[in-house]
Image 1 (spheres, rainbow, N blue to C red):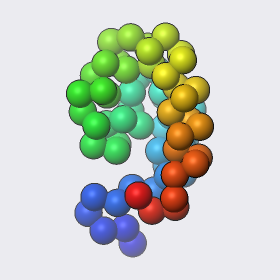
Image 2: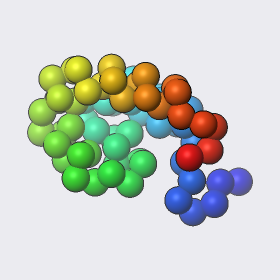
Image 3: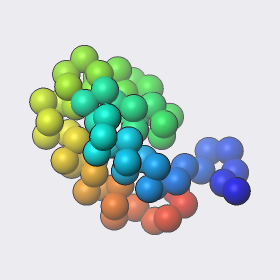
Length: 63
């Protein structure tokens, strides 16, 4: 069971791939400001979604 503040990277990756244009993975990680930016720009016009997916995969299991 993750402690408060820890997030499962596989859930974040699924949110990024499926609903990245809405910024839900950013909200899940607690990054509210960039979540709003992703929501308003469609995931930074798709480029941010790809970059975020790569960064999420490269992160340690519990971050």
